[in-house]
Length: 344
Ligand SMILES: O=C(O)CCC(=O)C(=O)O
Ligand SMILES: [Fe+2]
Image 1 (tube, rainbow, N blue to C red):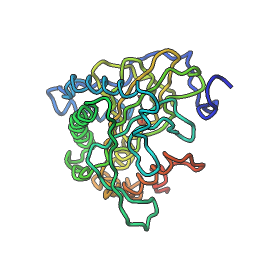
Image 2: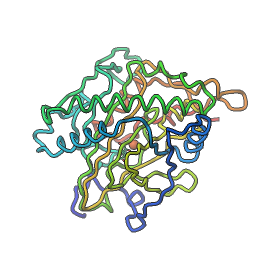
Image 3: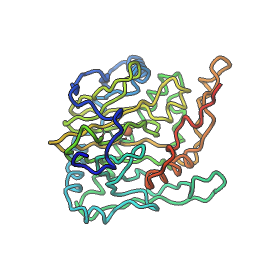
Image 4: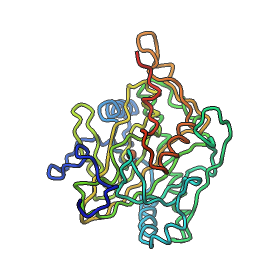
């Protein structure tokens, strides 16, 4: 079937409808230099509630830092597969290069390079609840391009600052103190991913990334000018393309903010469509707490009328569980926050 390996082919109901691919401008764009903090907080709150997604401009990340990262990412992916595989990810080391990622057991039409923002954070050795052993995660850096490592680390520091600022605004919009979860990000597992989506001969059958929700607290995403990211509109359930806005970052609520907010804000499904002609690059920063953190609804938002909707869960065990299914294709569903949902 088609020109592509069957591992990439989506079930009929998940294939993109390319003919109706029109770029509409609906995901809110928020100017972070807005002088009224109150206005800013209410715009962010509204976007989180209605969409779970928004774009930010005047965000403080210097444009030359972003440009350098784009150049280095392109240089890295342009190398031969043999070169890239020198830093390949494997079952033990989850960081580095990977070209066979699966989302919901279907292969994604992309290649990635992952690195951790913090040096050598720890995670549980296994997903087993009683196994208390920890292991250290380490980055793998390629020899080429020569300034890759320092460029990536500089970018990560800038985007991390933005992530803290956005989290603070999001928490304030929920009526929670902006610093409330600050300490959760000590020894954070935050990750920067370089995504490269090559042109695809059958974009009607495959996806760059299959539909999914991010398990982070929030995600700060840079995309180039090609387009392809689509967001599931909460009210209707249709797929809305996120129009590339030069210099903007796309922000989305992740699963952890969904739990902290006790479902006031939702981590919304999204996916990436590919095309026959143009390669595309994107760079998500997944803002992720340290392994020690227990995620549960914020007590400020829980009362008799609105009881906690989730049982507490441990970040490290969740992460370890996800990692094993990222690498091995598994028949069962990945661990999800709905597995911790309290059903009444
Ligand atoms: O490439 C994109 O625009 C989004 C990628 C994405 O959703 C992800 O890597 O989690
Ligand atoms: Fe995502």
